[in-house]
Length: 338
Image (cartoon, rainbow, N blue to C red):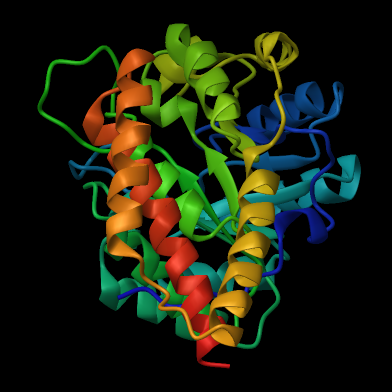
């Protein structure tokens, strides 16, 4: 069962600029100092403030390029000093965390394989205790929402309040055009439960091919996610890892300028939470039961019919509105409990 998270919204971290999308960009892997700096200069030229690069790379097969390791952190430090960008990288162990603290890494993220392992998550949480480093958690490789939330809870209990997530899709054996199944339904449910959580999409790992990046990025914006983590390389075709899914800084600028940004649904969800609180107060004062099962079944049935008229599946409509209803009940119960 998930618990309340004590979170500082991403807009208050001092890292990102609005309006959406907040953007984190940089190469899949830090390969050489020259490559790191050239890519960073290209991104800084059009306003990217947060630079990403993989220092340690979890690979399926030994012998594959597994990152340059700690020496690459010196290159990220140079990016900070010379270009004024914030820098971030992936960690998977306590040792990685300590190295990042040593070199002044501004943000860390936790990958899909690590977020699926509670032992590693606890190790990382313990190593971060007492620090103020923002942490972004990618979804586990499999579509397990509780596992994703559990990873966030471990970090939050260690005192990490600058928390966010990165949705990068889920592993699948199905025949789909993308590298990973987008699984937007789970992202929507997490967003509904925790509207204050900084929420990024990773279209690069979701797509696996740069030709799908725009459509997936647009979908993320349409769903009201806060930002994007996109892989960008000064020479993508020569990249040492994930060459096919990376963009040049120039092409990334074109993608970002092509996005249509609509009203952020996170604000709508936050406003709805306030309404739920008021409803809970009314029910408490008038001795009305929180859960009105019959009424909810009728509302849900109506929403499903309206969804069908718009071409939406019963499953997706039910998932979205049940998540919203569950959050409303949770808020009202919190009022009842004082």
